[in-house]
Image (tube, rainbow, N blue to C red):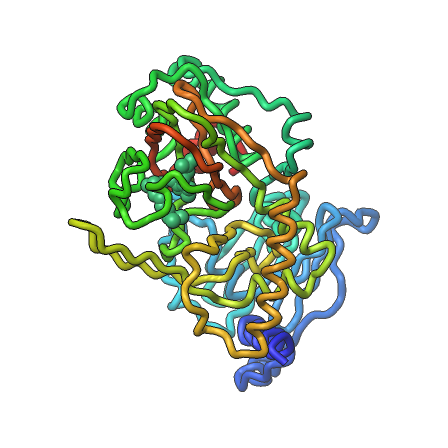
Length: 421
Ligand SMILES: C[N+](C)(C)CCCC[C@H](N)C(=O)O
Ligand SMILES: O=C(O)CCC(=O)C(=O)O
Ligand SMILES: [Fe+2]
């Protein structure tokens, strides 16, 4: 069974990574003999249970601030913050990790109220603040989400009354920008109002939060239903919910839309929180959620129109999660651009179709759909790793401009403003 094979693969990878758990590696007995493990708890003060530590054959166990942490000895040597091992100006490691003996073990260990002291066999001393260890240990980190979010359906989003930010505020004040980014990080969409309806002004807006990602569509793109490219976006047809550029190895992080003109009917924009839908799948059918995180798929874009010859291929699962805390960070969903499935054996394919159907059902629930009419002056930023967009068919002349942005640089701006990102 695929599921078992995957589980097995995962657990054996873990074994390889974690030499303590079951994988016999020949040097272990040797160093165990020469350096016997101390297996009793050391408390700082007889009455204090605040901090305690214990040396084991291959790791140090530390209890502090109600967190039980385990540190591999190589990790403890590798992260040494002393002047010869770490450059505090650049936050870069100077120590050559490959020079550390993989069997290293501290000669002596001491803990006071605030600090763990380790002396290594060559006499080098490493100090760690206990608070630093809590913040940086696996056990301390894994409970933390990387990206705090508010998952939404139409009602949740509307009830939240998330304000649009005024263009001048956005461009000229730190507060306006910060409010915008906070909303964008939490909801995956955010609007700027009173933007002059030109491509140039939209570009200035985009550059305020990130770097423009130039793609096969150009840097700033600008389109009408003129069939100028080999993609349905350049028609008047309705487009079902999807994320863009699923056919890139790294799909674009953010998409900016600004409707510069529409003389006609229809053409409303559809927005759906893909992470909300995925969360419903996780609750209702966890094994289907897991399958969607494991099965790799190709997406493809082929166009041969006049001067445009492009062939892009991207591979990855529909749901991408961080392996250490199972947090969802990227959704690839575009049924138009999904390529031939040739990365999956037939029996798994059937289960994948069922899981894809479950997700699609969630994505298509009318209560999850947020419909907005984009108007000149109102720019929309969409988290393309989380939020699906689509559009209603339309009549008449409609002009849309926008661009893609890199995600890292938006997060960089957010962190600079003091936001968790
Ligand atoms: C936005 N812009 C009109 C430039 C491109 C549209 C690309 C559409 C493509 N099917 C995709 O989903 O990636
Ligand atoms: O025309 C629209 O509103 C959006 C079309 C689309 O999906 C896109 O440009 O990525
Ligand atoms: Fe799109």
